[in-house]
Image (cartoon, rainbow, N blue to C red; front, side, top):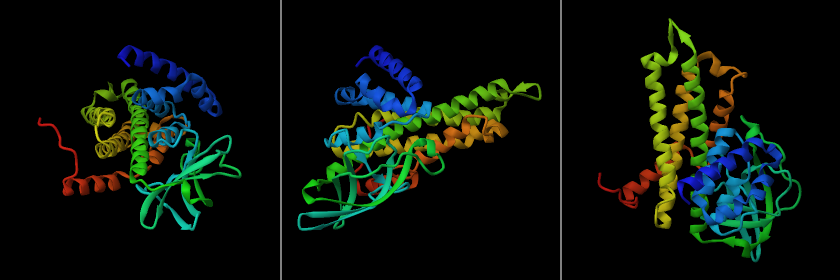
Length: 325
């Protein structure tokens, strides 16, 4: 896909994200053919939509679909992600003959209709597995927590499934998490980019001591720091799609998520500071982005947890070699 085609795609998806009612966004994306695009051009499909989703504070099933598609499990299931701040599964499975019991502890995206099946990363006999199980009953219809409009809610329940539905291949969980890291990196980049734009607009229009706020050196330095991390986050997110091997892709995706987290953290801190009192009011949009960022930053691993993982890889000598500069 060349740059012109990507620009047209971005324009079309921007219109859908902006104009579709929240409860209709998934249907609008399906009608547009986003799922087919995901199969053919995953990089363009995920990067463009998720960044727009972050900028527009929209919510869809794109994260679930991206993760299940990357693992070959099909794109229609709901994913039970680990509880916030956990980089690994928080659900546990046990097997008795052909019967499997899964104690589900995680978070899920709200849906208008209950899914037919769920995909649950879980721990079984000390190993990470991915379980597919049929879902029966109701499904959460509204979000909770600091940003309920983000559409995430805790799910604590017990599922029963056939043990044949478990995927013991470690690559399945690794690919699912890598897909999640890539998608979240793009969404956080869009989200933090919107926070930066709000701050830049504010300091460019407010006057103090006869000068615009943006003319003060301290303000320039803070926003320049955010802008630096924005560029790093964009480069890391795109680079996560270019890694060759499975292990390398997982590492690159984790780096992209960590870098996007750092951009988001810098935007939350510095942009709110230069916004001053305006950044704390309900009338200004900044608080909506800040709360969404605080939900997404610890998703599939906090900055500290992922940095620790990458540090262990570095000490073990299993990180991909970097090009000579």
